[in-house]
Length: 63
Image (cartoon, rainbow, N blue to C red; front, top):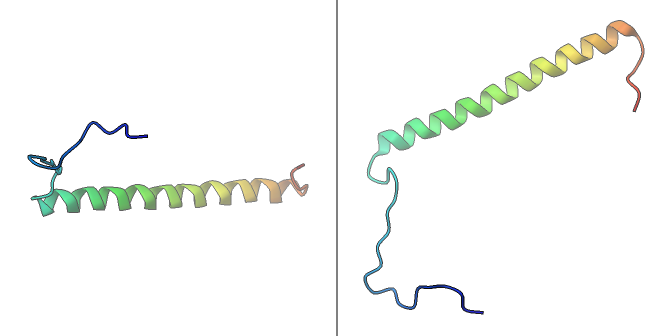
């Protein structure tokens, strides 16, 4: 099962986005970290609100 159109590596080239720009790599990394931190804090906020709602009713949610 040989479905690859490449038969030789001679003349092959590659393009790496932002490979020569450490500043852009750092910006993308910081953006990814910020998104992860936001997701974690948002989840904690939601879970705390849901827990308070369940606790104030005195009845556990039905499974």
